[in-house]
Length: 276
Ligand SMILES: *Cc1c(COP(=O)(O)O)cnc(C)c1O
Image (cartoon, rainbow, N blue to C red; front, side, top):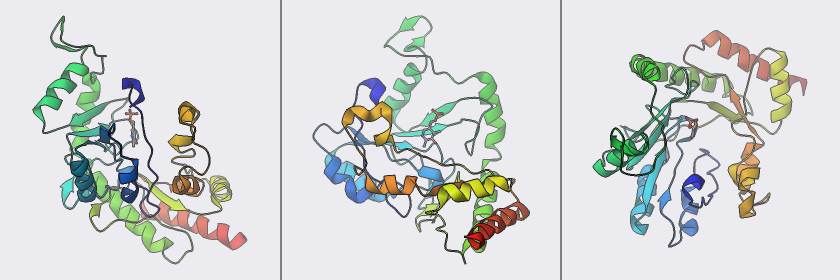
């Protein structure tokens, strides 16, 4: 957004699903608003019907950030197709990852398809004839070859992630820890399995000692990043995102993670609370 000279306007998150709070979008829209960028965060789809309604009412575009949601579904359809531009990252750790960086945009809009193809290749359609200014963001052939093979396994891997999540849920159920939720309209693909606890930092340290690596996605909300200090946001500007960012902890999650390992992670969490 910034690199093309546009201004990002932040909207706080929904505390239940960590996605954009749709009820807060309307007040953020002005006559200058060009697009809404919903992020299907952690692999959980945004409530697109609701969002599309707001976008249509205001005659603005939607650009889906589906970088964590390859194969996730909203009301039975895969995300990335609910707007003119569904954006996917193939960074190695994503549900579909290359062996280096890569990404793709999906669209049903001819005009967007043509423009994106120009943009990725110095603005050329025919070699050495530049129709517009553009960088080089071509996907390496080697990455494409790897993705071509891995794509065939995506459904299976997502299924395994969902089974792992289900097993986590069954074990975490009795505990006071807040598990993530799966919305009724969603088929979540659990790029990350993120719990919430007020004792986050202590729990993370404790788990590390027991050999369990965890992550924090993400420690600082964008509006408080130094890179975006120009907008003058301070603590309290986006209260939900700020609160949640201090409590979230991503537990181990990947297709090959087995029941035994999940059991060990949850047992470790249990002993943390016993020692409290
Ligand atoms: C990974 C990720 C990106 C960035 O993808 P790159 O391939 O690193 O450019 C953007 N948005 C979300 C939600 C992501 O998870």
